[in-house]
Image (cartoon, rainbow, N blue to C red; front, side, top):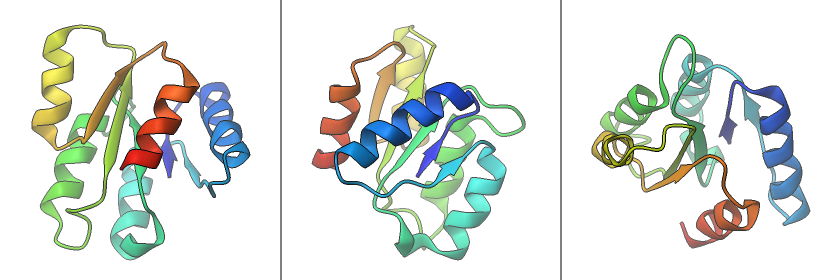
Length: 116
């Protein structure tokens, strides 16, 4: 699952993952994605989530995923335009398994998906 409010970037990630052989569900709203994951947690192998989202931030999304028994082991990759070391720390503190600052190479996020 990719959760990203920038439609162009979301489509770019989706196309890259599909080219690598992955099935991808796009979500543009972290609250809706949270509901989807809690109702069908075993449907997804990894989640890529943007840190800066309207309504529910990616960091809060990660916290809630890690607090829920059915989704607490789901690998999470935080992607954000925030570049400070403190933001990376926030990602890991919230429960993300990896943190990438935009812009990044698509090959990097693909490798993380394969690794997790």
